[in-house]
Image 1 (cartoon, rainbow, N blue to C red):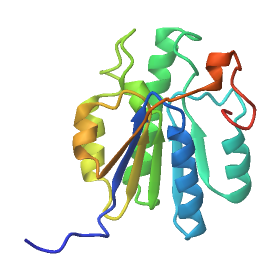
Image 2 (image 1 turned 180 degrees about the vertical axis):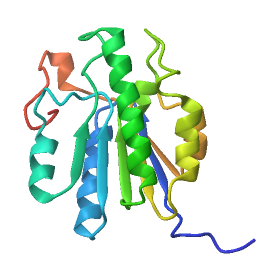
Image 3 (image 1 turned 180 degrees about the horizontal axis):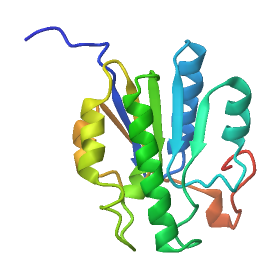
Image 4 (image 1 turned 30 degrees about the vertical axis):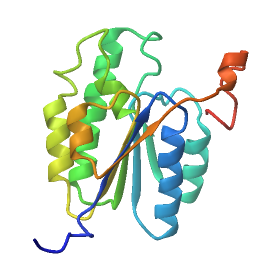
Length: 182
């Protein structure tokens, strides 16, 4: 048995029903950028029509971040979501295979892959996602966030963290908070 290739690039998955998956990935992005790593964040559900705190600061400090979604699945038609996912996936494949990044964060990709209210396999094929994870450039770290991570993605990951809710202010009727959720 040879030495492990510590420079191969790791696959990290943040999943579960608790809060903090995107927050953890964004913190990792800041840390990586602080160490001179080239970071790319692609958000699969968030829409460019809304303003997010992470987008504001990352634009200022030079971390590439793109919102490619259309928002919550109940706010737009299935066809609008399907088109957004198709565009996001093509964009993702192009960016990842370019070799221009050290860290790529695919935020809420798990959520997108878990959509069951309309068909997505033809616009965001799981097999292509798995192939991209396996064939990405050597040394590139990939972070995949979102609830309901597919077992096939978990199996390919080097680290899987499941966020579990214990207590949440939503239960008290406090909605999404500026600077905390967006």
